[in-house]
Length: 189
Image 1 (cartoon, rainbow, N blue to C red):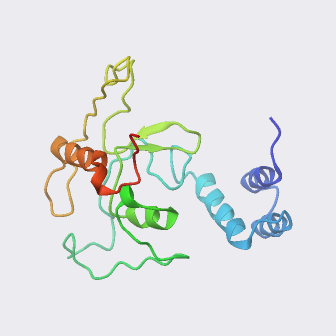
Image 2: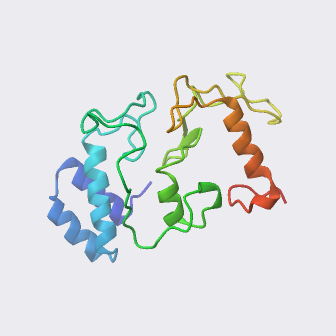
Image 3: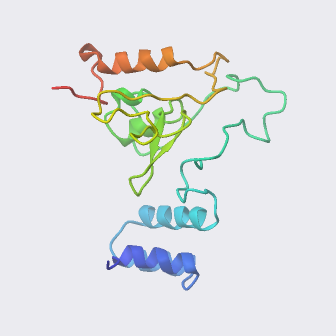
């Protein structure tokens, strides 16, 4: 399969045959914007550094345990600390991913909400709040797709310290499925 010019540039940057400066110059010459070229260079650097075992720099690796930051949290209590400022091209209209109307909202909501599963760029799915991805093979997905079972990871807490339970997942599913909530996550019509 032939690579496009941007893919070739990313590969050259990863293997070290061109410098970051050369990458940015050549990427700009292809017509992509400077912001996108810089994003690609930075993402490529994180991926190349092994910053993630699953090859995707923006999600934790599949087998990484969730934990608070190792530094900077001494003497702090969860939930305190002032304002969170997010600078992006357009203000978010909601911090609820189920009511988001674009990337601007989804980026903000991803700081306060997490899905049960994550999609990787190659289309594969990894567990996030659950122990494994349901499948017919592991018995967690009915062969006729009429039911699915999720096994929540143990020890996941809400920001107030309350444990995450299956009732929370049920509540969210029922809220998303309710037509009067104007959610963007699902459409049963």
